[in-house]
Amino acid sequence: MEKATMANEAGADYFVSIHRNAMPIPGSASGVMSLVFENKGVPAQLANNINEELANTGFANLGIIERPGLVVLRRTEMPAVLVEVGFIDNEADNQLFDDNLHAIAEAIANGILTTIREGEAEQPEYYQIQTGAYRIRSLAEQQQNTLRSQGFPAFIVSEDGLFKVRAGAFRELDNAVRMEQELRRYGYNTFLVRRPAVS
Image (cartoon, rainbow, N blue to C red; front, top):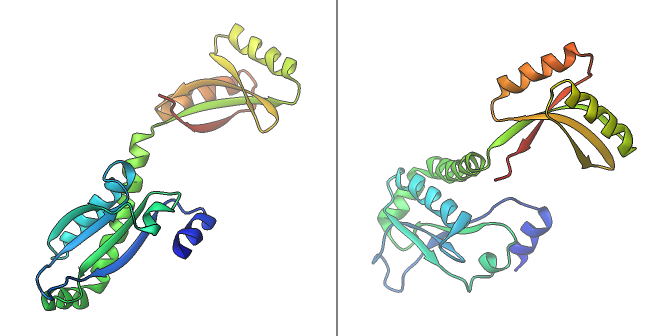
């Protein structure tokens, strides 16, 4: 419970707990596995990526196991995985662990990084050009109307207590830059805003 509380209070994006496994009959099992609350979503994705990276260090990949009763998996507010890096009662696993400690640490880190990159790829971003920010909505609407009369697709975003006037929504940065340059030729003080795309 203490580890889960610490992770929650820290506001962590992921929780990865690293352990060594063991069996009732010593030496009867070998390899790595990851435990999750449920084998789906981001936790399963994270567990699979870590397992695959660890398999590259020489361990057998034993897959993902659901363990909803584990406190560190049940009480964490972020995607959580408990990684079992080999069996401590298996001599071959111990030798592999001792000989490849740095590579094992890198493998776990790479599994986490792969999950982060996959998450970013699933959440595409777009670029908008901001031309003004006002405390009074009517002033923002005035600029919005002017922009539209000039042929720019302008809209208003209410954010941080301000009414922000923006134009365009581009997936490609180059297209946003071209519109920003055109807006500046009209005399607007602009800057680019990057936002996650809404499906």
